[in-house]
Image 1 (cartoon, helix red, strand yellow):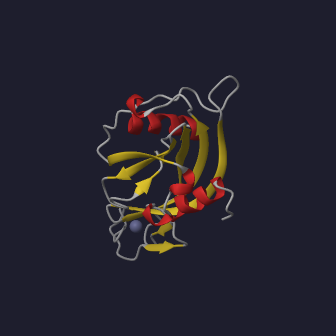
Image 2 (image 1 turned 90 degrees about the horizontal axis):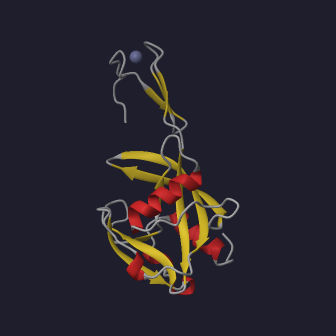
Length: 178
Ligand SMILES: [Zn+2]
């Protein structure tokens, strides 16, 4: 993170409460705020869609489609964009009247370390049904994904999941508690 104040180059910059950088010299203050991240449990006739991560964190482990919400996006806009980017399939507008049903069913905190910077995220988990979707509808091109699997929810091994928040969310999805 910051070792020197980006304004006055003081070494006395402090980091408090996992999110606030403060420079006692010039008063520079920066809030490394919690970021919103979304993930989708996409239910198809063949099971839930899980992706194999090609990169750290969690390389080789399974994850749900999703990612960070971009500036200017609502959570479901971000989820739709991430699903298009990662699965090559457009679920269409999500969650509104006459749109594909999409429901927030769980939310947990996560810490996502990317290129040595820890990002505190608020992970939002949505369930959406896609009974018409089959493997041939999907095109995996994103470089952060090395594979895709359809798995029946009860067959998912929690030890194969990349993130604790996803483990917890799938337990909620399966009504196993948190
Ligand atoms: Zn300063």
